[in-house]
Image (spheres, rainbow, N blue to C red):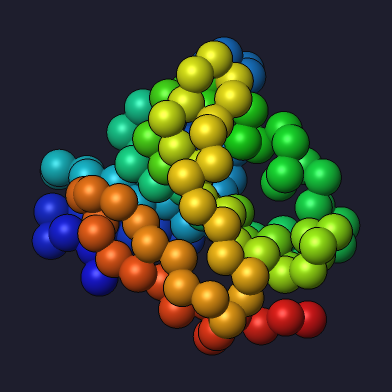
Length: 132
């Protein structure tokens, strides 16, 4: 469950000026006052959590390019759900961005719990994630 004053979006682009364009995370959690349906994107600085789910065709982009852009933009939390990870399906939570790098805050093999810090304060049950 997310805090009441936040929303989850699946098709919301985020503008990352330092990367000269838009990125389309699989999910974005943000606090959006006075948002209208015509809004197609938000500044990256408004995103509090971005989630990427890899596929074989985009795994490298989701593991390398997007996290660097999200960290550069200062997005506090980034969750990578990677069923194609070299060590097996894994969910990794990144945070504390500095430059274009995140610190790993936690990682869980599919089946293990993964906890998100404040303002979310929730534990994700990764046993529900499909492995293939």
